[in-house]
Image (tube, rainbow, N blue to C red):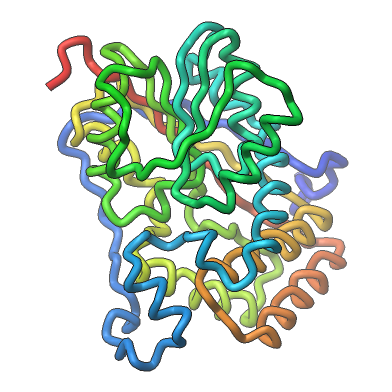
Length: 324
């Protein structure tokens, strides 16, 4: 086989699903969560915007507090549209007639897909951001879906009656949460006995890997990941989702990884959609640095041997019939 023969593929995206991994009690994840010195930074050295985000304790992603939320809303919609090609909810067991809760619904693009899949079952999308909820409601109005609506809720304080939903979905939220297990206990309360939870999040590293490697990109991403962890997020969360579900009482827990390999177009997509978001959400205000990183992605994308790797992790669990 020729070296890098995969790169001769004409498709832009290659999906390599791995088998589901059954998760059992007692699993521990040996990942070092040291912040490489960032936890020792004096708060006074951070910018005012970064201090505001840290004091908010909302985790590492708060659209209402971003540097440019209109730009981020546009990027969020585009990422969501792209992600809907991976209909993980079907494999997880979503079926027509189920009542569904989408936690961290963002602009509602994925929630709309869930509403189509679950119809005539009701689908509720929730978020803490008034800005993104307004976008989601506009999307719902255009779609005329009668089984879909959006509400403002905090994942740590879900104001729904117990046993309200058959299926709970959450995509790209848990990497930003400061207390995932607290969130999962709240979710269990509103999930019906026998109900399904499905969590989708980015693997490590969240921004993927690019070849050929670049010191500029690697240095930038290291800084981004440090800031994410400093604000309460977790770049390693995908590895821990299964153990979180087990620890909070869910059964039949399994985890699946899907790997994407992209070439030039995918590398440029990352530069245009993910790098600005990472900078916006973590208040990285050095625009010259961001532009330099984007140019570096474009330079690499033009190389014939270039490719980008990323992974998605899908964790599924069931609320037991006699939930503790």
